[in-house]
Length: 200
Image (cartoon, rainbow, N blue to C red; front, side):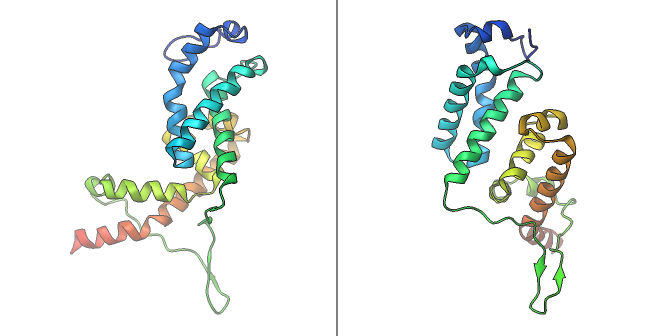
């Protein structure tokens, strides 16, 4: 058996495509897979399609699952791949925001980042702030967005995130650092305005 919270999943039953075992997997994982997909693609219909495709592919390919990782980690991997395919089909690709700023004279300067760690919690968690945070996440590169959502939002460990994305743990750490810095920079204008307001 492969241990899954909150109850155990019978891997052998899954590989036999036992409907009861698969229904248990669906019940335990559908909500978080949908949540991840929605945050990845930002569209309810696409997220629902990704959820459906994830479990269809999992059911059809369960014989390939070797049990070295959690079933949930395997499902995350399928969902991330499905999400990336949706994003790549879209024509309105976002621009990465991790580049430095090049001035007219050719000099390159880093983007300015304000320290907004001391803002009141009500400002950080306001509905307007959450909208800006969501927009900022949507402007991360696909790879960095997936890493950030899995590690910081879904709470996977560095190892689990690496397994899900099929990359090294060091690559996870680099992507996560870049994602956090990109989000911080993207939200600078929003929070600096509120910091000024608080100090007025």
